[in-house]
Length: 365
View 1: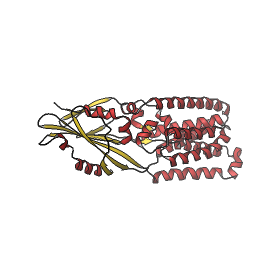
View 2: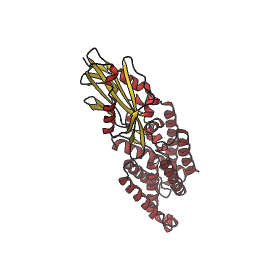
View 3: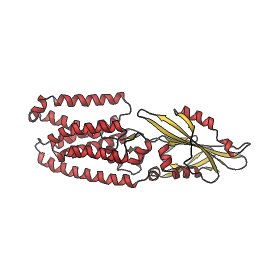
View 4: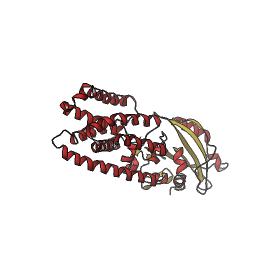
């Protein structure tokens, strides 16, 4: 029953929110975004265990939970299973949070590795109690699957090995503490029940936080600071780092470039050099760069802009990227120009955030 419930929760979550490879969707739905966790969104360490990056990721994890969950539930019982699953999932996400400098992590893989670790410890430690499982080759199968999955992670860079390894270690430790065959099994059962109830409660609380937090709230989670570049200043979240006019957000690959230069002859729109920006986008690895059919970022007073749409390919999928090329006259001789890059869904769901960023750009004294 518990195993079926865990599978059902993942499936329902993905049906409601949609399994996605889109950065903006993952950010909205509660994936582990490191900068946001450090800025106070602790619930992502929990909610990320229910979010999956694409349909295949969801399917493989759902099958894994179903197959392994039944084994661990038969071996440990319902409360212990939930406790092991929850601790391993959170432990894996914490390992990834502090070991990986940037990026987005999601999925039940850390919890699954924890289940593997718990079963491995129980079978090894209490071999005589599990003779039937040994005779069926369960120990060897568990060991082979664990090694194979870790090995694949070194070949396939999109896999988060720190989450997998952290989940495996925490799961193994939980399997030791909650073993139904240990001398302290009664204490372990009571402790497992408390941990399981706490995990269920914190999962519900995390879901509430995800639903109540808008994309604009997510983007504005970090304190806003004013940065100075050559000839200009702008207000951006402190998590955006860089210099020489270029600042980037490491988790979502959003960035802004600001420049102050001569106005020259002609209208302000002439400062929007589309061909140069398309070439720059290509240098950044973007493909299929073209003018957007419609603009989505409202402009502050005095600014003109043109928007582009491009594609960014990564190890998992192709991301739609929106590029906003904007300019504003300072006086009769100088102009401010800016180029904003962000996932298209982020631009569509929180346009005001990027409008405010443009409005904050001012000439330096």
